[in-house]
Amino acid sequence: DSARAHYRARIAAQLKARNAVLVAHYYTDPEIQALAEATGGCVADSLEMARFGKDHPATTLIVAGVRFMGETAKILSPEKRVLMPTLEATCSLDIGCPADAFSDFCDQQPDRTVVVYANTSAAVKARADWVVTSSIAVELIDHLDRQGEKILWAPDRHLGNYVRERTGADVLCWDGECIVHDEFKAQGILDLKALHPEAAVLVHPESPASVVEIADVVGSTSQLIVAAQKLDNPSFIVATDRGIFYKMQQLMPGKTFMAAPTAGNGATCRSCANCPWMAMNGLENTLAVLEDANGCGQEIHVDAAIAARALVPLDRMLEFGA
Ligand code: 13P
Ligand code: SF4
Image (cartoon, rainbow, N blue to C red; front, side, top):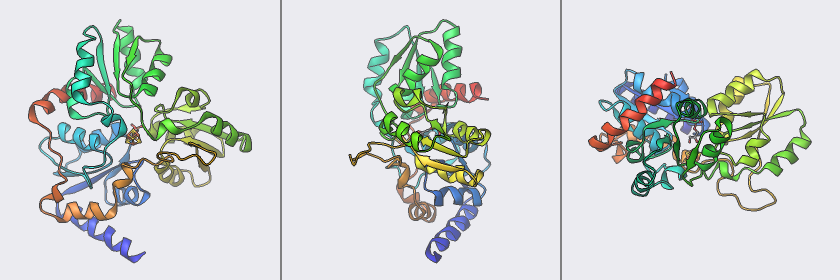
C-alpha cells in the first residue's frame, strides 16, 4: 500500500544520502529482501553477506539479519559504520554458546582444532582457529581431516553431526541448536511427500539427522536455491526458514515451494519455519536507524582486541571459501 511505498522511498533516499547499502539475508521479510535488491544492496547467505559487505565501497552497511552477521561485517570492515535495524535480533545458536563456557570447553581439549560456525558471537570466534558457514563446512572439515586434525565443533550439534557423518572426521560437538531447523519433522515431511510424490526435499543441515536422511539435497540457503533451479521437479518441500521462498519464487515462478512441517498435529511450534529474530528486521526500524544521526543506538561495536583475534579465523573462512 502507499504507506509501505512511502517507507521504501524514504529508505532508498536515506541509503543514497548516507552512502549506505542494505545487506539482507534470505530469511528476512520479503519486503526487506526486495528493498535490498531495488537499492543496489544484496540478498544472500551468510558467507556471501560477509563478502559483499567487505568488498562494497559504501561507508555504512545496514545489515538486515541477525547480530552475528552485523558483528562479522564490522570485524571485516572496521572502517565502515555498521548499523542493524535492531541489535536485539540474535540467534539461538549464539545464545547457546556463551564465550566463557566455550573457552573452558576448548581449554579441556587442547589437541583439537577449534572450528566455529559463523552463527556465534565475536568473542567465540576470537577463540577459534576457523570460522565456517554451512556452505563450506563439509569441505573445510574434510580438508582438516585429511591433515590428520581432530575437530572441536560449535555450536550447532546437528550441523556438527552432519559434517562428521559426511567426512568421517573426529568431531567433538558443542550441544547447541537452531530453534527453527530443530523443529522440522521427518514424519511430517514423508506424509507431505506422499501427497506430492513429485516434490524434491531440500534441507538445511541445521535440521535433525532424521530430516537430513530423507533429503534429496542438503545445503546452505544459496546451495538450496541453486539446487532447486537445477532439478526438474515441479515442486519442493523445503526444510529451512520460509523467508527463502521469496528468492525461490522470484527465480522459479513456475515451481511450487512448500514449507516442511514442523511440530504438526496441532502441537505448538516455537518458530514455525520463521526465525523470530530475522523477523525483527522491518521497514520501520530500518528507516529509523537511517534517519537518526546516532543510528538509534543500533550501531555494532566490537571490542578491538576481540575483533583483532576474530579477524584471523574469519579471513581464513573467506580465503578457504574463495
Ligand atoms: P546460511 O545462509 O549460511 O545457510 O545460514 C543459515 C542461517 O541459519 C543463518 O541464520
Ligand atoms: Fe539462528 Fe536459526 Fe535464526 Fe538462523 S534461523 S538466525 S540459525 S535461530
